[in-house]
Length: 143
Image (cartoon, rainbow, N blue to C red):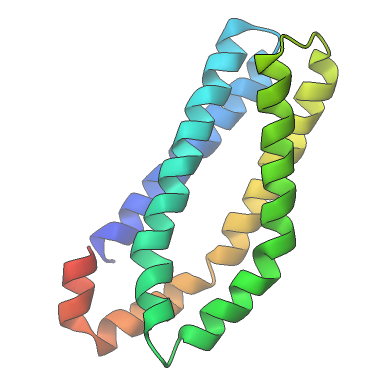
């Protein structure tokens, strides 16, 4: 398994661990808010790494470009929902909202949507392994 795939797995695990902590503590607590902030920082890092290590090499290859484009199109609505839920929670926390039950419900929906997103994106991993077999030098450079 290429090093970057293992890294992506670790980043994803850290994201969901922090989301689980935030859900368990609740956004009405400082621990819950801190866990949410860690989760969002981890989400940013995970998305950036996935883009760099999976999407970019596959999107630049004529054999895999259409597949990546199709998957990206399927994820578009899901990504929008994730962004809206994230913004709702972040704005609620920034403005000092006391509607923690609504924020916690949004957090649960956000975690669910992220699990769906990463589950669908996992279809890229076998495609990436195939790409690595065809481009061993490029695969080492992207690791």
